[in-house]
Length: 179
Image (tube, rainbow, N blue to C red; front, top):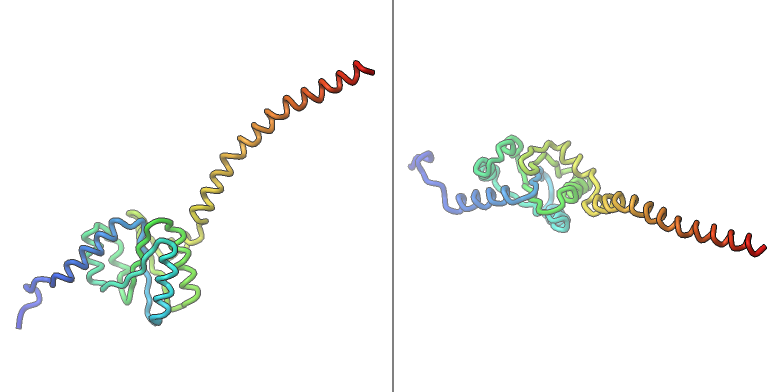
């Protein structure tokens, strides 16, 4: 019998750790969820929903994910990698992915959002819920554009008022002179 402490890790495990580590470093955010009790159809539906918001939901062995998190420098993730967990890698709109994950968890109580990481910040389950409550990127951009547009519209109205009021005054003066 060989001693497990001296045995070298299998190449596919080393490759998987490298893949997870690379994905952790390149993702805008990573959410951790527990999928215990979910059917294959429910997980497939969840993956399709998340894919629409720029996220990918993947199941890895916790041990390999912990090694990858350590390798990627994401230390706080190890505490929530317990039980049957899946990682949701987000590239793009983090709030939309959090919203899709929250909505899927509401529809399927077997899905439990445990937390995640956003940049270098470790997120709790309540932090992910707060992200899900944020408006979408498009809505925030629209609000910003509206905030920029409001003073310009007011200025344009004031600039139009001056010649219009001058024309009314001039017309009144001409009418007065004619009478």
